[in-house]
Amino acid sequence: MKNSVSFNVDHLKLNRGIYLSKIDTLGDVQTITLDIRLRTPYKEEIISNKALHTFEHCFATAVRDTSDSYQNAMISYFGPMGCQTGFYLVVNFKDYSQDEYFKFFEKLLKESLTYLREMKEVPAKNEKQCGYCYSLGEMADALAVADDIEKLVDEMTRNGGFHTYVYL
Ligand SMILES: [Zn+2]
Image (cartoon, rainbow, N blue to C red; front, side):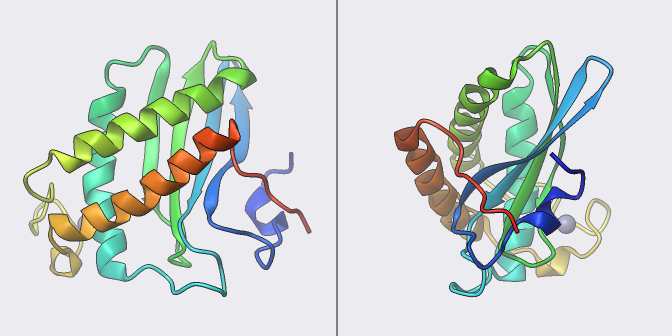
């Protein structure tokens, strides 16, 4: 796998889905970048900035709180793609084998979405904790994105694996 893998993906043949974008290895730690692609590029409308930003706040909190009880895995980053078609989730793993990643993410995504649905308010919605809190929406904005992601997770489960890229 090349390092700048996402530029090697043919975005005209990329459908909505959950893709294992990248595996980086440093010593005994493997860092996985997951491509949670909610919109099919150039065929579907992009996600609004309000929805992206609100979901980012909620899910970043949900996924970290959820993964606290998981062994040998640490969330490094969750955030939106600049092209507004999805999100990246970056996780560090120790002592995992490649065939364990699918089950891990299936469980993590499901549990984090359940956690998010129980949240009462958008976390860190204030000037002290966010760079521009006026572009944040309400829980309803995050819940709509959560429903979209849940469909992709279910699809992934039915397929028994991550969605697969078509490379350039
Ligand atoms: Zn923010």
